[in-house]
Image (cartoon, rainbow, N blue to C red; front, top):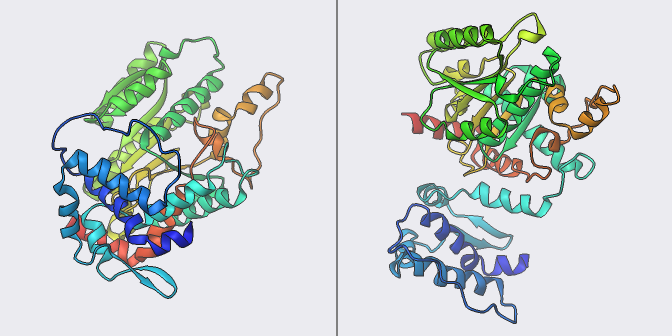
Length: 393
């Protein structure tokens, strides 16, 4: 198969490029996709299958001129050329692919991820994939300027999720569990546990997650308003459990002032008064690769998320999350831990091993670290920094 791909790389990879271009194209008419009435009895060559996909699906749905328009955008067919050693990128490949939002690192990384995907994603199932993601997340944490507390060697952990919602779901479950454990209350209904979130336009993902856990969601527009909400809820006998703070890009002094205020509201010497603090840096978090924006990641929250899809050019499913103390999230998510607690046994994780199934709702996990690694190595740190500067200029 690999020899066939190398031999017919233009036919095979072109539909991949076309599919990505289709994401920005409006269909000629809204009609159901017409699939063949019958499936073929005999198999076909991979290049023929990809050509049929391009002709019968993309061109029929987006118009007969779609493929012609795509051909015009590539003066030399595809930005690949054949060499004695195999396929390599041409000099103008980066320009062509960036223009049409096709990420070569994503194509390579997701392909490898599909090959090595495994159930449960535990260290025992696949040590290589597990340790690869650990190393990639630690390396990125250092480039972003995160505190050492988020590194694996200091009992932190980095996780590459498909989107922000995946990480928030895990954090919300953990925050409620830890609050119940701190106040020694397993009988109160979940709606007495409060989640606070910065006001944002797209609030519905967090609303859905809170609803699934039957927790109450309250929004705030400033640290001062958050302080009033927490005081009000405590006086009503409710349990503030989680603060989701959107750290928006602003002047350094104002950014630090707001962040420190929120941190002071969440921290407490008494465990029962502690509130899990989660910081969402969004796409702006990648700006911390530049020296003038290092202040963005000087946070001490329990967890944080940086979206890497835009500035790292890794397409969708590149939500980077770091947790400061991975044992706390393991205690809230590990199924075995919940069973052993019934017998009075405290779950204690091995500080040298990480089972990613314990940091998410799903038991399976695709390795998204490959495409991040390819992106960093194919562009280089200087190349990524230059792209970020061009993007914000």
